[in-house]
Image 1: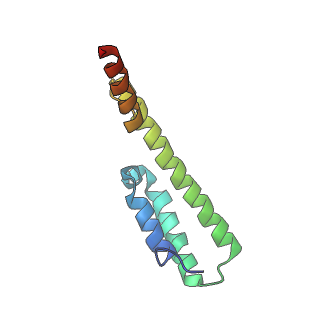
Image 2: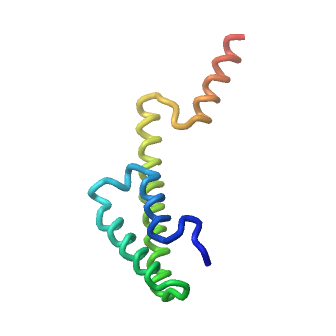
Length: 102
């Protein structure tokens, strides 16, 4: 099966670059393990070991949770500062103001 980004490692690097929270030193062990597993899967070729695949999938889940938690924290901080938490929230606030002005 061909990977859209060529290798597991290159796909992982795209994922890691997608969110700055993964560059935090607190997550360096998680990122290092994920890179090692991606390299191992790439080295195993077309028939990777099931355990390696399962461990890698678990690491991707952990990375997803880190990103999700970081985004939730940013939303909470935005709300505390009175800023809209998302683009949709901003649009809703603008619509409410426009209706109130009529």
